[in-house]
Image (cartoon, rainbow, N blue to C red; front, side):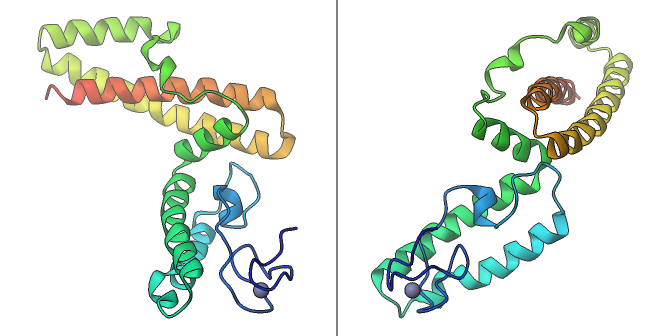
Length: 195
Ligand SMILES: [Zn+2]
């Protein structure tokens, strides 16, 4: 347990000291920042509530009469607060964050590889794009949007599985799902760009 930088007593929560009220240096980890368990299923309303409460408590205006150290912590905290909120609120970004924390690579590298089960669809989309076949492009878009929807349902299922089991194998499955979802998302954007 860390101690308050100002008075040396244990802080009340992760952000403030119970004894002297000093603002503490912000935790770098996004789950810690919101004092949330490292879980993939997250109550969005609860995250919102914590975000707005912390926005008020950590706002630089609150600290303008305080020492330089707390003014700096306030700026640092506010920056992390916004990044942490954006990341944890979005299920895909949240999962990417947790995967990275657990030593998995980020999804950027692999998105160039076509998932084998999508080869045919990608081929058809490329044909339609080449011929500017509007109806075929629209049909492909509808198909990819449905696939993305199925991915999201499956992802939610695996999120629950991970929270319950904490198994690394489930994270590996989620890594695969996210790569596939990213690929589908890119296809949708490509097809949309032509309309
Ligand atoms: Zn203190």
